[in-house]
Image 1 (cartoon, rainbow, N blue to C red):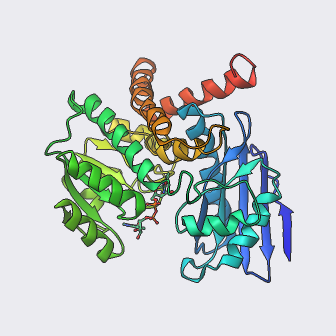
Image 2 (cartoon, rainbow, N blue to C red; image 1 turned 90 degrees about the horizontal axis):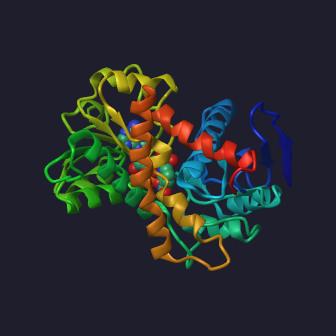
Length: 350
Ligand code: NAD
């Protein structure tokens, strides 16, 4: 039996907890904003130590989704869900129960895959709600598209930092050889870049290295390895007081959400002379792809890929705002997104 309770949270439209003792579900859904449209964001399954950790994560992630959709020009708000649990023990019943939780938002929250949730899990969610995207036979797994968006972002960062978007012989240090990291590595290698990779599961890193002619380093070493680009593709918070002094790269451009441990680390990167491709701008490819599943025309890959090209121009505009206003790129990206949300809120555009 699913029990849903409110977690009133300032600055958020709706945050709720669901517990189902029959299926073992313990989850939080956070809807940060629906100003631009229904809140869309993935469903993360993680063995959080405390519920407080899960709430902290889902609040940051859902807010990030608001900015991600706004910057990508999508008519979507920001939301996210997290399930507290052991990824190795997931069941169809758990996801069905989660589907009921999603359904209780009446379409204000739309879910999709995220860390430790896959297309098959979304099928179980879909048995209880229509408010799910990234389904098999439609836009499918968003990860390759997220990787493609990162690659577009990487070229924009290269042009800004080196005056050319050419990746040949540039060294990209990828932290996390998962769904996105492995696909991103392949795109980089195909474009002539050199891959250095690390994962807490050595086997995953070895596979990526074998597929790309890259090399493996330990997860402890990846953040301070000699490279042109540090690409965080694991979990968030890897840009912080401890890691920034050790970075050898000129660019940070990767897929992980919430890469900056705190907002001030965006400024710290600027002061260290490191160009930042803001996470929610660079990793919007997957969101853009699933968004294309929602319209009445149905999913079309070419239309989705065309929309992803905008990541390049948006980043160039953010770099320009950063220079003009003397602010870090992370803040410039926030401004870029906020301007669109405010314009829609005030009815200036739709
Ligand atoms: P994933 O679970 O497939 O991959 C994550 C990988 O990181 C795993 O292989 C894991 O073992 C590894 N890892 C975890 N901690 C690590 C550490 N400290 N050092 C090195 N490796 C570590 O997840 P994914 O779908 O590839 O997503 C990666 C990141 O990108 C996440 O932060 C996710 O929120 C973000 N993201 C993903 C998508 C998408 O389409 N999948 C979209 C936007 C953002």
